[in-house]
Length: 258
Image (cartoon, rainbow, N blue to C red; front, side, top):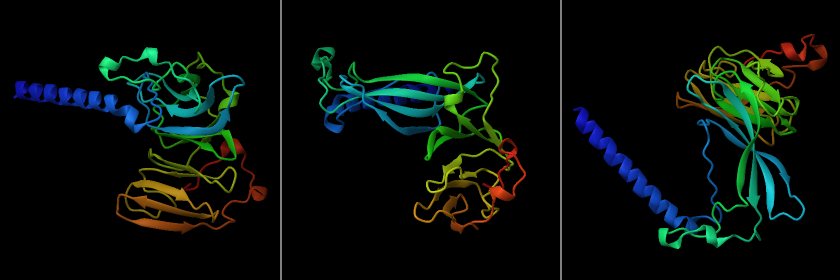
């Protein structure tokens, strides 16, 4: 039985390798640009930041990505990576390619580069990371615990804190289990939706919540879907939270089902 499973694994690996070679050979016909970067650990989340910088006299633009780590019992990090993306008129060096191997110029050139710029210590793996549209320096994350963490990455060192402690700028509580759903309101600054395996967005679902989204045209309307085959549309009361009447400090803020 063991030898049969080993044989099947070997065959599957060969098939995957052959399919990869076919894909790689045909990339020039599928894409204008291909860049690959080997991460030290898998990432469960990725999101482009909106900032773009075009250095004068360079044939590339600088973009930024938000990533997270999913390690094997080692320290996890929230990561901000800098990406060098070649301009449309960038000149590619074909000498780096071997036509006999089916390689063509313009893919993964010297101009294209990906670097980890900031690493912030995180509690457990980063299930999801999303920046706030009104201030992209603010990033909220979902953790293996029930908490939602909020970081202003400009207030953290580029290299991890030697102490090994996670120090978010905010810690939001309210859930009972971990989850993956996370979404900032694009109309209302500082308003964040969170969903988890405790079935909780105002107690409306009877199974794990898969995803949800703010309505871009109606600030207080959201749509949610879950594993109970149900899609729900919610319109929250605008006065559900009034900052002027609250005595709770920002650092003590606890999510009330959101």
